[in-house]
Length: 249
Image (cartoon, rainbow, N blue to C red; front, side, top):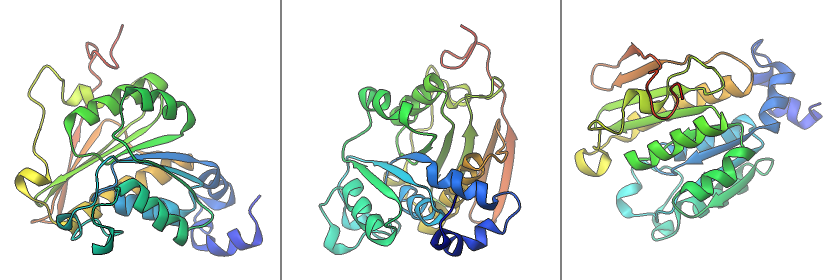
């Protein structure tokens, strides 16, 4: 049951038929791992903590740089050279004392995946490199944990949901097989505009909340956002039977 304080705090969410008190309790009991506390992880962690998610694990081994500040909105110039996960966790703990925040101040590796994935209900991939994406995708398929992927460069963004609990769900490797040339561009190579990241992170957070409250989030859809035309395009994906990660063994 929710406390009187929680009922008041989350009243606008509880009003929604698709959430209600039971959905809010599910959010309070949920544990979410956010991989990458940069331009996507910053707003995503804020919105998940604000929505009442009970436990957040923030994983990032990078330190804050001056060039991060226009889009990594939790950080200020006083935070430069500090670890991103530690800094975000400290700020979120101050703003959302009901949310338990744990910082993982290192780059996620296989050992950390094996430790944290069995503990969490959902993973947000807010990373910015292909090797980490493959690692997270493999771990989520192995442990059957839903994964919400986000990426953005320039004026463009993409978002997709992978749910290994559904036997028909394609995975990231189905879309970008490691044997082929996967997209390697990131904001360091072609630039990025902050609001594009906010839009993609908002979509990631929306999908996460839907999944955590038992609502349907579309799988097998690659959603592409064009910030210049303000348009979304949606492409249907298909699980690849010969995928070396999620295909038939």
